[in-house]
Amino acid sequence: WLDFVCQTRVQSEAFYQYSLQLSDSLGAIRKLPATRQKSCNFRGYAYPPACQANVSIVISFHNEARSMLLRTIVCLLRRTPEEYLHELIVVDDGSRDATLLDDLKQWLGRVFPARRQRGLIFLVNRQRRGLIWSRNRGASVASGHYVLFLDSHCEVNVGWLEPLLDRLAQNPRLAVSPLLDPIDPVTLHYRKGNEMLKGGFDWSLHFHWLKRRLGKRERPEAPYKSPVFAGGVLMISREWFLHLDSFNPNLKIWGGESIELAIKLWLCGGQIEIVPCSRIGHIFRRLHAFEFPPPKFFPSQELFSQELSSAQANYLYNSKIIAESWLDEYKNMFYALKPAARGIPLNHTSQELQQFRRQRRCHRFGWYLRHVSPELRFHFDEFSASGILRNEDRCLHARKQRDSRHRRQLILASCHMEDITQWRLIRVTGQLSTQREQCLGAGVQLRLSLEPCGGNETQRTAQKWARRGTHLVHAATHLCLDNPLKDRLELSSCRSHALSQSFQFALEMEGHT
Image (cartoon, rainbow, N blue to C red):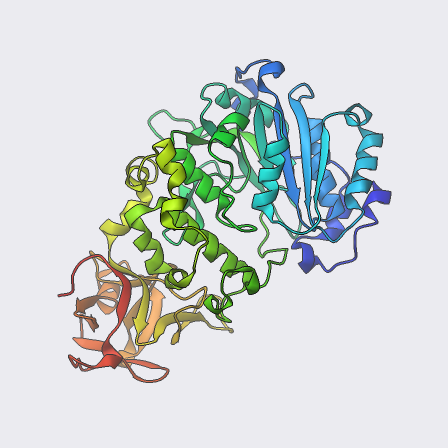
């Protein structure tokens, strides 16, 4: 262990986005707390014998610390029934540590000699191709009945596999996720995950956790349907995965692949479940621990202003492919929140991107809204307008103040900033809210301010706005939101043709009054 780990290249902890020193000190495997419900230990799991239900596990990594990668692999080998672990496929996606894979082969060959001749497959991308391409490569060489995609900074808990096999045996078109227990990136403490959450996404195609609501007599540890996978850890029939054409090969490097696969799976005859009796620890890093190709990687460098990092630009590119492939008429919701995506040229037409779904006779996206993720439909019922709020060539933005964790300063900024504020005009109350539930209101001396959206009548009155054409009229004072000077926002008397008072939402759900 020490001989292998000590050859880790010297890097700052920011490089890995977790504590390398702690990781190196923990050893190849550690005892994990029992985080699943006790009833899981007494359930009778029913699944076929190994000759009909063995598993290929695909781990792709890029610049992972040696100790973290090895711990991921060792706990898999120790905590997975040997007869069901058909093979472990490790894909090195162009890491800087040139000898890592050879050293890993030797270490595993000594410690797990029974696996030396079979069941361990090592693949190398000589140049970086990204997680999506690497996972597809691993799946293409897999020969197990099922394939599990696992990140390289995970620790499987005791009894993780049997609950997943139990569910997959009941439905060959099912894909399952374990319930992910978070591992703190700073302390590496292993904590209990929340079985009252399911995976989802918003109209900007970013992942979000959604609240799970228990049915009558439903227990928290029971498997439950989810619109999207919990993180990027999922298990699926290899045959069914290949029938779905794997992860979309048009997507680049990393970002959106789990959302795209989830939409495709649901619309084309499959289902997704989260299985709380299966527990896998996962480090959720606060920032990307790897570099993305520079903007020249994309069809046109002009698309991406200096406000977008390479990672953000990559995600936006992938998100546009998802929108054009699957969202149908609802793609306008995506473009309303991500207007910069409109200018991105793709190498494929919408007809080409939708060829797969036509061949498989998949449902339209409206079916997904009705049957899988009704949470997305709330957008239409709850808001009369949403998206960026444009005043001429700039947008209203709530900028975080350096000296405060919570307070925000109202400014006008470039509409193409990645974190540009998204506003919602709430239909019932007339409140103008950010996604962080901060509402725009008028305080002492009619000074504009952002405060938590009020629940009592006085607060709601101070934060109530009416739409009059493209004007935003403060209901209590009948004054209009105005931008008389470059970086100044105030309330002033309404003027019907004043451009400084014209604020346009990216998406209006109903006509102006």
